[in-house]
Every structure is written in structure tokens, then in C-alpha cells.
Amino acid sequence: MAQIMTETISLESIAPINTVSNNIGITRDDDATRSHSINHFHLEISEQAISSDAMELSRGRAAVVIGLLFGTTIVGSFSTGLLTVGLPRMAVDLKLADNLLLWPASVYSLSIGCVLILAGSIADLVGSRKIFLLGCFLQGVFVLGCALSGTGLQLIMFRAMQGVAVSLCLPTAVSITTTSFRAGKRRNLGLSFMGAGQPIGFFIGLVLGGVFVDTIGWRAGYYTCAAANLLFCAISIWGLPSDRVPPVTWTRLQNDIDWIGALIASTSLGLLSYVLA
Image 1 (cartoon, helix red, strand yellow):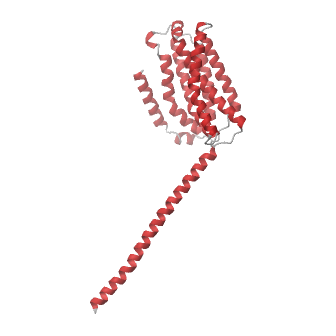
Image 2 (cartoon, one colour):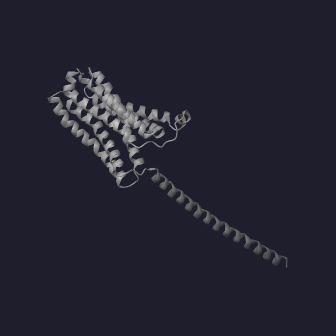
Image 3 (cartoon, one colour):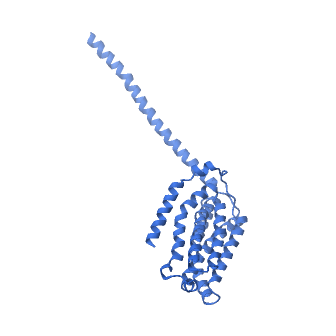
């Protein structure tokens, strides 16, 4: 009789345990389903927030923004085309040593690569429009410095500083395009024009550079490029949409930018480029 009662108690005690176990399993499945649904919901909200950050510009204003970014990209590559064609004559006029003959072209790309990461980080904090305007203005000033160079060393220095100015324009131009237009036709058109601006500008620089070198001199090409840069900068003050970023504070400058990582990456890239050059 005791054995029968023991078996009965054991069976009765096991049944609730199994029921609780099954309920726990169902609860875990429900929690997993609910968690997946919440994550999917947050992902949709994030995508909608990113899309809503883009402005809704009129057709005319959108054409102005795309045209300004396109023109600035053309002018930046235009100076490189001028240098490619006019470097032999420039080397003679400026008495550039043979071992430094390639440096006016190499130092430009070197300085762009070194500052590009840091420039993008600062633009995210301060605002893409401000950094773009600064880069466009400095680019015009340093191109003018190239035109006024009296020695080969001065030309190399101004080309290096021009590369720094261009590195301020490249990431900010992409950021302005993505924040000014929603995902779709206009954004794709803006990015396409920016990509086409570099080969077009280089081609125009090659053609006009040869004309300038054989006629009025290579300096005239740089004067033209500097004037175009400053003109685009002046129009961009009116044409580009304003930034929508929080106020900049010293705390944000210290915490929101990985200064050490950016400096290490920039220094490493600069040393590697120097060795390969």
C-alpha cells in the first residue's frame, strides 16, 4: 500500500513539473518571437529616421546643389590636369630638381590620404556645409599660391596644402548629397555627377593646360582655376542647405572624435605613401 501511494505521489508530482516545463518553453518561444518583432520594428524605425533626415528640396534648388558639387569636383581635378601637362615647363621655370620632379603630383595625393579620415570626423561633428565651404575657399587660395610660386619648393608646399583643402571637400560633398536628397533618383543623380566630375575635370585640365602652356603660360591656368574655386565658394554660401547638427562644445570635441585613432591612421598612411613614393 505504501509503494502504491509513493508511485501515485511521484506521478502526480511529475505532471505539474512537465506542465510548468512546457509553459516555460512556450514562454521562451513567445519571448524570442516578441524580441525578433521588436528588433525588426526598431530597424524599420531607424531606416525611416535615416530617410526622414534627408531634406525635400525643390527641383530648382536641387539642381543648384548638384551643380555646385559637380563644378567644385571638376575644378579640383582641373588643377591636376594642368600639372600633368605643364610639369615639364614648370620644372624649367621654377628650377625644380630632377629628384623632386614627381613630388608636386605625389604630395597632393599624399596629403589627401592623410587628412581624409580626420576631415570626415570633424565634418560629422561641426557640419558638412561649414567644412565644405572652408575647403573650397582654401583650395582657391592654395591654387592661387601655386600660380604665384617662385621656386619648386614653394610649388610642392602649395600642392600639399591644396591636397589638405581637397580632403575637406571630398567627404563633405558626399554627406551634403545624402542629407539633401532622399534615397532615389535625385540622390543617385547627385552622386553620379560627383563621380563624373573628376575625369571630366582632369580631361579639361589636360586640354586647356596644353593650350595655356603653348600660348600665355601655365600660370594662367592656375589663375583660372583659383578664380573658379572662389566663385563656386561664394555661390555655395547661398546655394547649399544649412547644417542640422547640435551645437559644438569642448566636451563633444573631446569625446565624439577618436583623435588618437585618426592621427595614427593618418600618420601610418602618410608614412606608407612616403615610402612608396
